[in-house]
Amino acid sequence: MLPPGGRISGARLARLLGEWRRGGARQCVVDLVAALKLLVADGRLPVGTRLPSERELTEALPVSRTTITAALDQLRAEGVVESRRGAGSWINGPVGTGGGITGVDDTLIDLSRAAPPALPSVRLAMDVAMNQMPEHLASHGYDERGLPVLRQRIADRYTARGLPTSADQIVVTSGAQHAWALVLRLFVGPGDRVLVEQPSYPNALEAVRASFGVPVPVPMLSDGWDLDGFEAALRQAGPRLAYLIPDFQNPTGLRMSSESRESLAAVLRKARTPLVVDETLVELALDGAEPPLPMAAFGGDSVVTLGSASKSHWGGLRIGWIRASADVVHRLLSTRAAIDLGTPVFEQLVLAALLESPESVLRQRREEALVQRDVAVAALREHCPQWSFEVPAGGLGVWCALDGPVSTRIAVVAQNHGLRLVPGPRFAVHGGCEQMLRVPYTQSPEVLREAIARLGVVAASVAGTGFPADADLSLPVA
Image (cartoon, rainbow, N blue to C red):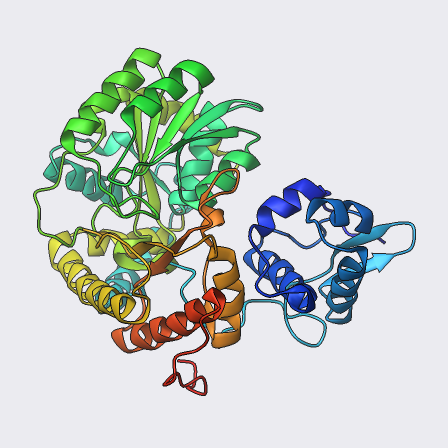
């Protein structure tokens, strides 16, 4: 039986592969196999995806038919690809050894996720939540809005940031990604356009596609948002919705100024385009500067705000929220039952305990992130001096401009040196960003130093300059 899954065209696969060649003709098969395996490991070629024919691949890449055949033979031998005469080839399983594994190699230093481990305060909050659970066990446990105590504390946090908010404006969700999916379900239908930044958070872009929407990118400038570009895109594309990350934008780390927020809100109001603001990283300011007001303070009821505890506290809590007008909240709740019936009670109690005195917890997270950022910046300047970047004022990653369009190559070769990275094109809507690479700084300082030292070796290898004389490739992977 053939696995379920759509077919990918040769042209689409070529765009996903990007600049995958590393060496000459003799290296071509190895490079192609490594690049295809990276797409599978990243989930961009899901299990069951039907591959183009060898003839179509030969024309799209372009390489010789012999190269395509040899690459597919190797992938079949490793269990990554399966083929059947008359039925073609498809992705059979995740990348691994001995016929594939069922997950990512956990011996790699993971620089693919900009997500920190839990703070000690999370464990203490779990003890508080456990003591509070008995009073909730007598109820049915379903609440599509979220626990009142948690909604009130989230609302209080917005009010403290200069945006008066009531608990009735908050809907608790199972993470910000779930919140985004709920909002897309409410606002976007098949074929509707959604205005997004370029680059942007890959999972947010995938959610737009999964809702059958069409992401319309507006390129970021080196120092921020292209307001003229947004105005032109609103006029020409007529999007149904806009999605922005104005606070420590993922992946650039940029923060939108108050003046730009006011100007952009005015442009969106004129176009009557609702705005969804992702504030997942808003609490991770590292420079001590006075923060601007939340975007909803400028855009009013036309702004829907998404929040999350994943970066500020711990991703394992899987708690997010939506802040919106009473009308939008009512409409969201009327459609939510088709997706889920509420967010787990225990995790909500944990976050409510953490938000009882939020600044003391957040201060520890910021201090930790500041140390890690400075370690990453110093290591990048030492081991990758040919790259350029701006030191981010907040967030969890450094957005590096490489010395050539080699981001995908670096991500592929890095696996051989114990590193897992996300290539720049993942952050783009239709390809691009091949000269960019995000380096998260969520690992411990010791692991970061080792990882970026290895990254320097990879960069030198891809650039064809050879390995540094003192490079020790036998170091154990942390």
